[in-house]
Length: 400
Ligand code: PMP
Image (tube, rainbow, N blue to C red):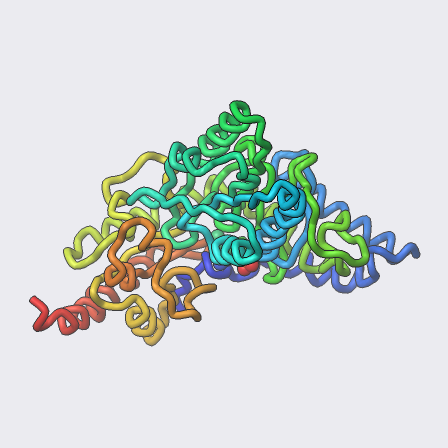
């Protein structure tokens, strides 16, 4: 099997499995219990919290969640508590997101819109990246939150977060309007070097299973003082922001994976860059191949795209057909976001970049990780040339 779908989920790191097993057995007690076993579990939990905070550069607060989805949705939901105050003034609190956000931000913003909030969506450029000036244009006196992801999960486009934050802060300085900036860093954590303080953001969403940790666990990092009302109540765990008995094995597994991947990030980025270059080069020898975005072919500015993700297609051949053919040959790739593939929807992300809907339908996503080898990319390219191109030829017959 050739696994090239690491952005959907990564195989577990042995260190994560060991930490998970150890926590599940040694720290089975409830961290909220006041007895000795509970205190030991609480100690392990707080240790993990400090270790994740350290990987993020220190400072702020780490709230453990069930994954980046929950981190995103729960943070966006906090804006409802601000809406209550805005209602008094007869205005709608406004959330600004982008056209390339993960469904857990995009759809959650739609849901909040249905509940009376206002939402604006900033489209990216054809290169899949946002222009900070366009984000600034979307701000107004009712804007309470800007949510822009760090690394797009379909194209790998790294967003100019620091510049976007600067544009928001400039607007706040001019208007006196306090605006929070949140970033979904599910595809950035331990893959793209960053710290929340360096970006200047107020909140960051993380996921464990994208970096070899267990699934069903993640975190929401909050800057000091950036915690508006969370809309879930219960036993008061996680500072009252995420009630429910903590998933301690998951949390310690995530922490072990994050420490390993964070330490190896520079070397892994270099290795991934060699793989993505080989893939892009191979595709450039196939005239029928389209790269999404095309700008990536030219060798773009350093750091503009994650080396772990490459998106391309053979229009008009639907990506789904290629994914099935690849699967039959033991090669696991994706059409785009695994989370929305079940919805059979077209790629909202690619279409927002101005790519025609029928072309966007051809999208394939290859994503790599520490176990990926150049041989995997070569096998994929051979498969594309030997099996996919002839089928594409058939599918275009009669249309010329
Ligand atoms: N955001 C992005 C950018 C993602 O790629 C994903 C995973 N597809 C998520 C959020 C959701 O993460 P999780 O599976 O941890 O809920």
